[in-house]
Length: 399
Image (cartoon, rainbow, N blue to C red; front, side, top):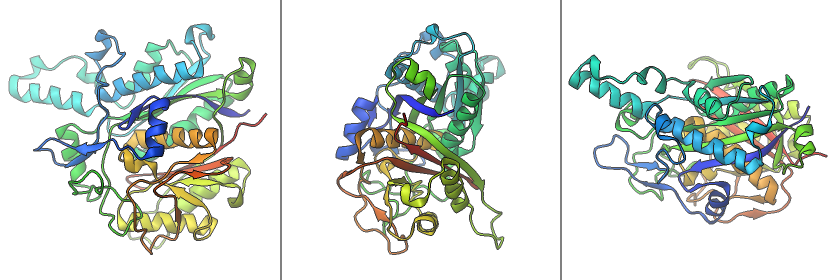
């Protein structure tokens, strides 16, 4: 069984829909902007004009922005795949999403009501809107997906973990799965929770606040949005004549040892595991979509892991998320969608903004302009807070 990507539903700060997002990414059009005064973070990646877009009013009142963005992305992905769920069997569509912090904005609003007006004023939907599985539930209801459903919670790595689980669902004879993730972490409460992690940039200039692998790297910029992806059994996709962006050929995950232990980080194990799962070697990979945490120590650790597997400077590396910020549960999903587009168009998107790669990072970072050439295999790396690592290998569609 081969899992193939047939639909992309991108909802990103620099573009909604693949037809808008891809040109923006290639030309360096940023979605980062200054956040309102009083927020704990100064710069963020904001998806404009998508509040409840395409979401029925009765659903909008019971969902957080995080879920609404996923509903929009799911509709875009199905349309892009040319799939009408009504034409599938009742149990032929599953949903597996990624989650990180849940429904922050909805939760903040209801907690404010609790403290200001009392428990009688807290909406009944608070019990479900914040919950990690809320997006999976709402997407499955919206599209009458009665196949296997689930949610993976591992912060930034969750976007890849969800796709790994979706592939397992396909192997168990469910022909189509909607997978991926979104995030909406820019409410005042959510930003305050993030601000204490020591990894967020304090920069105020959207053009220089987030510079992974750069000498000036001083943290990352948070953002909202992500991507929902239609993952389909390749035989099913061929049978209906669907366009295939890329195949999901390999996936692996690992977990870092406790801080202070003598054991090394486990990112290299995830990379090598994904390559092994795909039946490929380092020389087969044409581009690495890096996690790009944006702090000196984390960037150095990732660069060393890449060099340990591929050799120093031996494989092109890119971080398109400098235009969107790190989207947590939505970030790796967006990277996978971007990698699929890179394979589809034989084009590596650049890392915008980075001008002076740190000597501590022995990588061939694609900067300034897209890099042309055959892109048959791409590796996507993600790391989540707390020690989560994941890696996915995409290949050009086979057969």
